[in-house]
Length: 492
Image 1 (cartoon, rainbow, N blue to C red):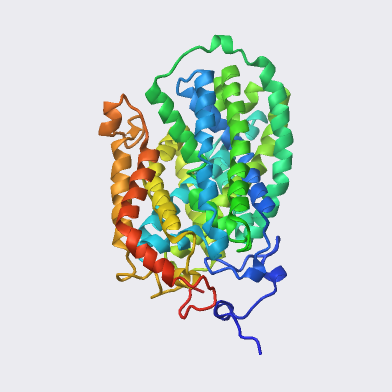
Image 2 (image 1 turned 180 degrees about the vertical axis):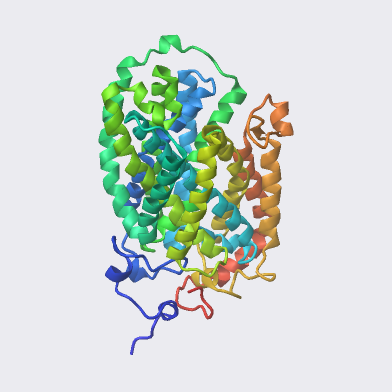
């Protein structure tokens, strides 16, 4: 007689793959371990998930924002190419997903411990909600521009109505879950590729680089790179395993790595280059609603109509991840319930942002500051992955108490120390003097305002953890079973 998987028993019995992982049905899995029988994703599917999310007007705007700092077109191109090399971070962060069958901030319990992980999980939840707010604000601004073109003024009742409608629509795809997100992004990517081609045809003939010769300082260039890295490869690392966990465990690591890396990097580079070129034609392209002015007057309606579903789609990635992060924090709620909570929170803050009216300044500051915690966390996660040689004990990750990663009352102080030291190092080399709160790190000041906060955070956080943990993680690696069937008190 076959024995039942205790993970399944926690969830009320095993279910057939088609019942637990299918589009147009509510995904039943949250932070629970995904059984191999339900892992139906392919590397090609992972590629299109990321490509579908990033074939998006947001990345067009990021390219324009980078050049708006005062860069020449050549400097902007270099910043875009350098910044997007770091989609390798997304590829690396995707590797634990197939191995463990769980989410990024459940994997993060391996270095931090169950309770120690709550702090970085809180940072991530706030970051994800911040990106959700960005997306919903953009949706409302696009809708307001469409009403304005039709002669309807942006009064308070209209703004409130649009916020409520945007929040309600945004809830649907993340509520249904991983399979729905994967399918939606794959098909929408084809639509936006066509839109991108049309935009390129319209804008390239009008780009006159002869009138755009200003040269920004090295320090300003590094600030533009920070924006691109934070919005791109590093900024997506905390989502990575949330979406790669449905790949079978036997999936070659190289396939997982390249699927995520190229799925993110290719559309990001192309769109940001187009955004930089469009800025040369019209500086209004730094706002989504100003993008059509860089192309042609007839392009206004088809562009904004097609942009709306893309903005909803990319926001689904953040809303899904914020939901499972809320669960990893220890909030006793199902995945879909966490999505509902986060949707309401994002909607409420969106209203504040819409009526405040400093969105693009707030966005640049948000992207600059999130790397302070994100860089060290990623460095620690990757150092831990290397020390473990990619081998985890999934049941210990999912345990409510005890297990291989419990350590001192659920805290691994070595990782916490590395995180704090890494964040302090990042703050030493950050240039955020034009944002709120305004701050210029001492090393940044000494180097003329250069900003390498993201890089120094990764290196210092990772190295401190490596030095402190090289012996203890080796012993844990020897004790890892690699099983998903042996936990006693498992999250469910």
